[in-house]
Image (cartoon, rainbow, N blue to C red; front, side):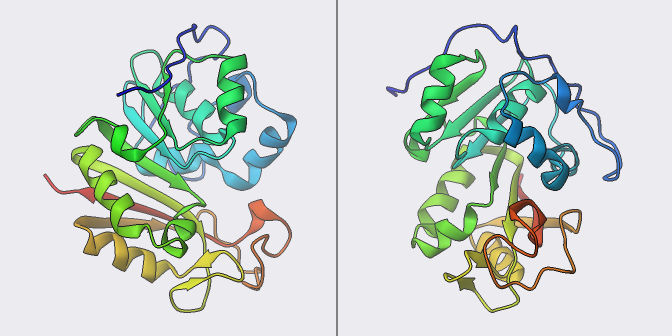
Length: 230
């Protein structure tokens, strides 16, 4: 594999303790993670990454794939969570994430351009946040899910967060997807559906736009946990 690897230390990133806690309590001290933007810190309250990671069972020492990581919001947090004993594969990256890692390298983050480049059975978890609807809308569901299944260890977790619609299937106009449709697609690809959480639900959301009732981090969202069979 010919992937760029960022090799400088994680000194600027404080290690976050990963503790299995109730969903009402943050599992991490997010304030300790360096090199984050003000917008990202403001996003924490609505995105509840500590709740979500605890729900998925993520912890120190794991190898996690941040699938379609955008600008790296979750990548930085996951790198701190898994620590020096773990690894985060992130990709396919936007230019902004590549530039961000070049400016502030993280020793336990490796970016990839194609999910096929991630080693077989190497990951304890694969997570994707607010991107599965684009996978479905772009007609890439079968290929992406095949790669997720391939890279996960037996018993590994596939975690999904996405904006919900009350319409059937995928709603292109609002960039939302029906929760049961996601469950049906993922289980058809050979995964076991474990549990859904309402921690990011918003009963005031009218399902009309991508931004939701009052901004992106207040959109009514599903949080799903799947497992690869043993």
